[in-house]
Image (cartoon, rainbow, N blue to C red):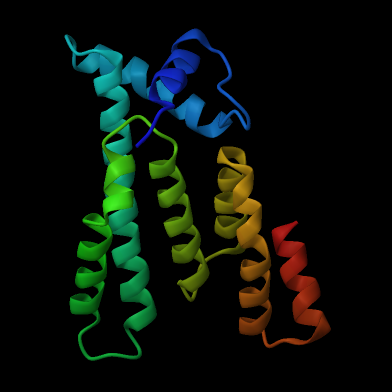
Length: 175
C-alpha cells in the first residue's frame, strides 16, 4: 500500500526533493545505495535496488529490536533470548512492517531509527552522544521523530534520579 516509491526513486536519481517533508536522510541514503548497487549488481532496474534497501533496513530493525528486548529483559527473566526471539519473529512477520519493507518507501528507515533509539535508551552504559546522534538522524529523516522526544526526556530524567538537576542534565544532553 505504498505510492511514493517512484517519486522517491526519481528524486534520488535526479537529485531532487520529493513531497514534503522531503526525507533528506532517506534521499541521501537512497542515492548512495543506488550508485553502489548499480555498480555492484548490474542488470537490475532502480526499483529493485530501492526495494532491496527497504528490505535490508527492515531486517536491521528486526535485529536491533531483538537486541533491545534482550537488553531490557536480561536482569528480569530466565530466558531473555527466547522472549527476544519471539519478539523479533513477531516484528518480522507484522503485516504493516512487511508491507513497507518490500517496496521503496521511507518507513523501513524510520523503523530502524526508532529501534536504534530504544537500543541507545535501554543500554545501561550507552554514551550520551549516541543518543544525540540517533535523535539527529531521526529528525533528519522525518520530523515526526520529534514526537518521541518528550518520552525520551522523561525516561532519561527518571533514570537519572529525578529532580531539577537531572532534568537540566537530560535537557543539556538532548540539546
